[in-house]
Image (tube, rainbow, N blue to C red; front, top):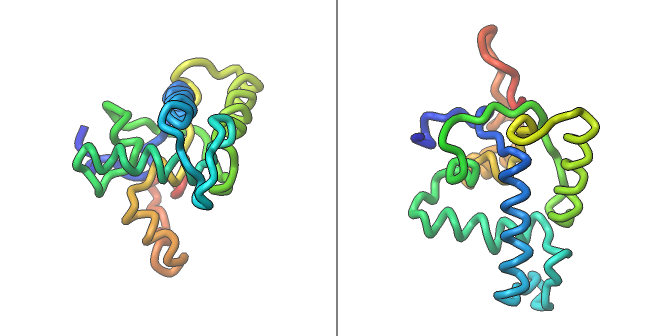
Length: 152
């Protein structure tokens, strides 16, 4: 699909896609010897969400030659409306976040593609994140009567 045609609130990422992403990150960390911002070696199980963006999703977007899209746009073949909104600090361990979302899905009886989450670092492009970080006066959008609240 054309990323620009998909509204940010429809750029969810499935639990299956998150599993694949975290597994790829831990494998690449081990095989490539990823380093933390401090220059120290990263252990595969300690890769943070910030490390994930800096060392995997950001470079993947650049390699695809599509720097203005969200990482979710590289994964999805169609809009993926999320059912859940995830907020997590950048320094959170990616494996821990995945484990929490796995438990969340299990507790709600969600399986496979039924567990779709909206997560700003994956669901928004870099320009959209910059706009969002600029503050509510710039990023806030009041939904119309026929439009869902943003973010979902």
